[in-house]
Image (cartoon, rainbow, N blue to C red; front, side, top):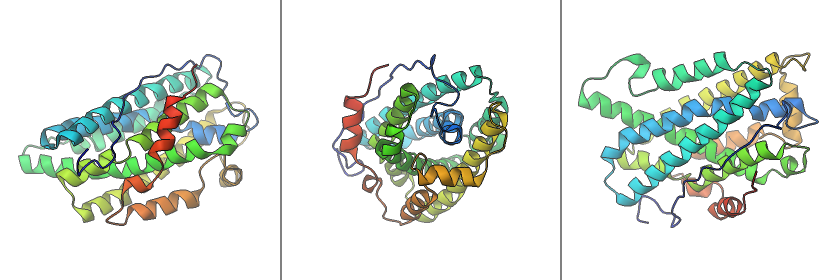
Amino acid sequence: MGQLIRSTHIITPRRPIFDFGETPLHWIADDPLSTHILNVLNPITPAPERWFCKTFRDALPWVEDNDLRAAAIAFIKQEGAHSNGHTIGNRRIEALGIDLSSYLNLLDWIFDRMLGSDPLGRKLTSPQAKLAWLKTRLAMVAAAEHLTGVLGHWVLNSQALEKAPIDPEMLRLYQWHGAEEVEHREVADAMFRHISGNIPLRTGAALFIFPLFGLLAYGGVHYLVQQDPQLPYRFRIRDYLRAARQDRVPKIGYLMRAGLRYLAPNHSPLNEGSTEQALNYLSSMPKP
């Protein structure tokens, strides 16, 4: 497909249907804390995914490579479907008694206003400032997509989740999303390198985005646990460590090593995960 997109696979947008009508609040039946650690991916996903799509749409006029343009359009369609899938998951969480509004409002402010096309609501007027901010947003999206690809690889390979007493529909949502993140994992990196390629900017964006998502995830889990009427205590770090030892959630070491790999200037997303594995899952994805 050319120099910018090295994978020969053509990215395919999909829009599976999910029915969470029977999904319980604790969808890992014997493990409420692991449920909420993973559950945070539902509220944390829609706003960033919309931000990815908006950034790519703003960047499309600068894309001169036809293969990269086609991959970027497919990326936008996939991310839009991810946002929709997790929005449906959020509705189920709220139907089960957890009010997500405050957390979702925070995410909307961060990704629509603080990091949107008008940073902090400030209208950029000069073409130079608009392009510089677009390049910065692309660098941040590339860093975030590294995280999602790494998490996608984890969820496709977690035998502990497969063996757990888990709601099959929620697992299907996570594995579908994870597989598509692996499938399109090189697109955001290629977009950034095509339009900017500034390595200090790439590094600085990663050093901002990685902690940001870590803090949002931690705060989101704390928020979910605090609102759960069936849990008499707040989220504790030891709960995460126990779940990580059981491989029901990603280990901190796994995520930190992935972050360090990304900081290498010549890092390639294709070295993370397996396109073949992702496509094998997507071609045999369970039906609802």
